[in-house]
Length: 484
Image 1: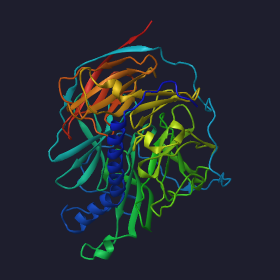
Image 2: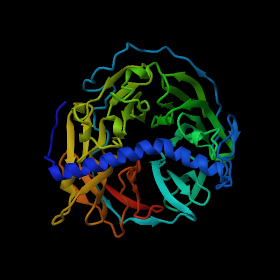
Image 3: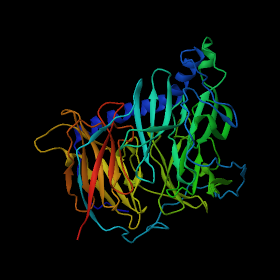
Image 4: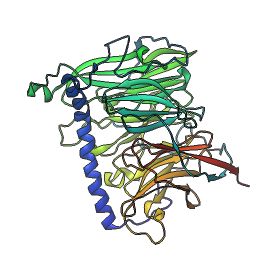
């Protein structure tokens, strides 16, 4: 693997960025323990006025429920089955290129884009302190979002129509670790939910590790009161544990795992029902698990599905260093992807925010100085330095906080912030020509380093982006023209 393009980074900027990375590392580690603890304490003290824990199995009603009509059939749940473990006791070998199942042919003609001014989406937001965008649904007309309700201290998981501002609540939860995911094959959302149990607010010893927790995985087809429990584990640990979920883009299956599991679990979706659950034939202990010289929690791997394949990208964030692997969830075969050679974790951003192009050929990840794209057909790395996006005549530190692929697999939208100018804007970047164009904006957009900032719909017609206000979302329309 070699770099196609690289720009030198200033020493002062690097030092500033490293300081920010270490601050965020601390925040990530604190969140693992303190977020569930915070909500558990509030619940025990009677501040929320709602029960904090869903029923241990079956169906139940989380707090602050808004009842809606389910949009699809109720899935059938079946018990998991075991699968043989593929393990040789060694860390997976380095990947070779092209990666298996790589689509080398350009499926969509190169395109050019023009954009409207961003329009504020008017959503009922009483007592909403934070809105997060998760993903576009495959119809390109709706998006999965979450909203935190300050008055009752819970988060709702909702489907939004950005054109009208109408939402439908699918689920609620009082802990916010772990992203929900949409499953097209079931018209459902699957989401993790971890809470502390047997915590006595008046007993300081119960607020210290080890923690007694209930780790769950739930699925809802639209009525929070009818959410189905897929996993329910009560455990005692000295650290937090939450499921990571990856869904195949066509909605035909999904996988999930946590930092305490031996194997990931795979679930097929057939005829509007959950098929037999199977353990992925891969031993997670083959991956780096505990940071060297540390007694901290096991490394928690996140997952994202590589489109048009049976592979998921496994990656670690935060202060444990960056480990990146590709896993075939059918065969259990795996290999290590060397981004930046993995020689120094400071070269990559604290949170990678990996983004696959729609064909699965290109993988974009954030770095400490911009972002880079791996071509899985050749192994080449393409780099965009964030300094290239600093407006002419402007000085100071600029940060690329998120990117989103255009349907043609050649352009990316980038959410950018600049510290000294309060700049919050979007850029359109041509990966191969390096042409960079600032998108129009008549209002200040939001751009935050630790969350999803923008989503480009699968049909290319709209970009959903965070506005400057924490509870506000904006929509841009895109006009598409095929290039000759």
